[in-house]
Image (cartoon, rainbow over all chains, first blue to last red; front, side):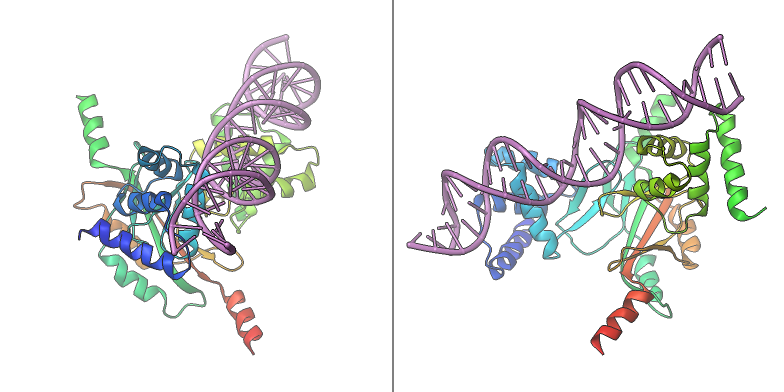
Length: 151
Length: 151
DNA sequence: TTACATGCAAACGGTTTGCAGGGGA
DNA sequence: TCCCCTGCAAACCGTTTGCATGTAA
């Protein structure tokens, strides 16, 4: 069983525990979320799901996303491009990189961050539950494109 | 000359350099931005400005905010509460704390972060221009309120 | 069989835009 | 005077909601 399948099964399990029904539309949304590495918007999820279920309505996608968000099974981002983006593959907060040119959103690894988070919670009046880190810049592909254009 | 006045003068200077006119409405918006420590939304800025200029329209606030954003003189946040928030007092990226209970947004100090940012830009394919850090949790006031309620 | 999910369409709210009139420089 | 800015209102767009119908369990 691959990673996607495992994640979908886990989500199905949790939905069942909440007495939620597993409809074909919901299953398609779960698969899309579990397989997406590009932090899709609701509209992008909707377009993907429509491929399998052409009658799916965007309201259903919103409702399912909202349900999963309430269960803590996905994280929501607002990157200021007008729509929210979601990560249902890994719902724990982790650092992201946003390309200022092509707007792609990648996971990035910042090993020092775990250490930093640990330090942060100590000796503060604020209780810190989660640290959201977003790095803005230019991705390798857009850097290469810029270099080629210049030459 | 205090800090607010200094920041307003700086903004006026920069607007003049761009051949922008200094209208009373714009000046009121600049003062509100320079004096606000609570990362206001457009609507909150609008309400404040209306105190001095009751005829001001919210479209003017949006247009001025957009102008300043394009000049790099304020930073925009999306915290998922439906509206954007702005910091025109200090437009350089700095860590924020968002209270999950009362939604207040405070600047917080994370000394280790400067060190981290410096490390991040080295040895990566991604070019990182800015690091946005948002800590989510519960502010001192809401912690105290929760404790009192429990007792 | 029955309560929950779907899908349509209308409503909602923050933001943007077009345009006629007003006011800085 | 000239052109930019203002303010009104309509448009826009992502998201939410109400409700009749459909369907998983």
